[in-house]
Structure formats: structure tokens, C-alpha cells
Image (cartoon, rainbow, N blue to C red; front, side, top):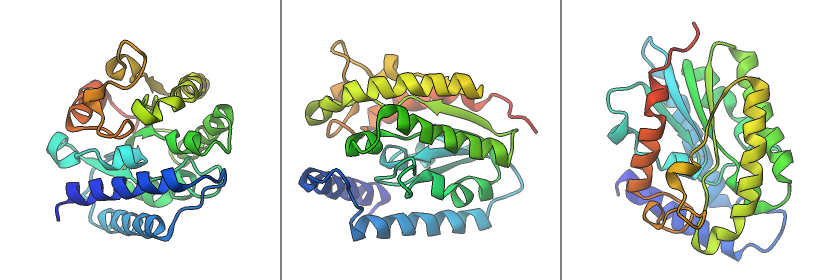
Length: 234
């Protein structure tokens, strides 16, 4: 099986799992935790073989994991550090808990961060609280190395059966933009590039109302492309 087929199978099972879960306290099933550990083991292995240069980190959840790095960043030092079903970590299990492996040990020059849709879907924390979790992520990276250039990306809109999340997404992104301004980092607003006339994710950009198609990734790539060449601090 190719990596793309495996990823699509994981997303299909994830969606079935989320639809079957009616508890406000969602616990990752064993297969998701196994996938998380496999990804972290991959990151550790990659870190051991990094050459003497600095890298661009794509950090996030399944939407980031699905980004075909070899297709769009073939000649650039980009590492995909997305994990299916990942959260900010304010609940104790997410990006906050894996920064060492995913970022600090990866010779980072830049970090493109998108996280929060799973936190919003769980509805355990408010958009403001989730944005505070993102603030903690950024502050940890800045404390590790103030020279790392951080790009905080808006969380993507949804459509179809996930469209009910959009009011939360819009509110959350408002707090993210404030967070970016307060921490003096770049904020990339993806909405103008992905939204249709109804304020939802454009249908050609999503397979299931949440995750991206190849066309969606191509658009995302061209939005962030100008930021790839910006000079990071030494």
C-alpha cells in the first residue's frame, strides 16, 4: 500500500470513530494511539539522519499529515510533523507533549503551525481556551530558540456534515489572530483562499467536508510558498 492509500484509510476509520463517539470526553482508541507512536518513531528516525542545515517544519494534525511533502517540497528541507487526530495538548495529549521530537530535535528554522479543529470538535474547551493552548505551543518554541520563525495558520473551514463547526472555527481563528499579534509572529489567514460564497470550505477542496483533496493541498502550498523564502533569524 502506498503512503497515500494508508493515510486515506486512516482518515476513513477516524471519521467513523468520531461519528460513533457521543461522549464529551473523547479518548483516543488504541489504533489511533498506535499510529501516533508510529509517527513519533518515524520522527525520531528522521531526526537522526538530518543533514547539516536547518529545516522547515509542518506541524499539525491529519490535515497536515496528509500534505504530500515529496510532491510540493521536493527540493526544499521540509519535514511533515502532522499526526492524525492530534490536538493542541491542553488536555494533556497533543502537540504540547511532542515538541521535543517534532520540532526541537529537528534543526528547525521555521514552523508552520495549524492545529485546533479536533479540539473544537471535542467541545471540551472553548475557542479561547484552545487558542491559549496554541499560545503555550508558540511560547515553548520561542523559549527553545527565539530565532525560529513561526507562522500561525488559521484553522480551515469545513463543509457538509462538519459545517456546524464553522461558527466555532471563525471564533477560534479570531483568537488565533490576536494570539499571533500578541506574540509578534506571522498569522496566515487561509480563509480567502478556501472559502466559498457561503462561507464554507469549497467542495473541490475537500473529500469529506474536513480533509483536503489534492487541489486543496495545491492551494495551501501556493499560499505559504512566499513565506518559505523569508529569512529566519540565526
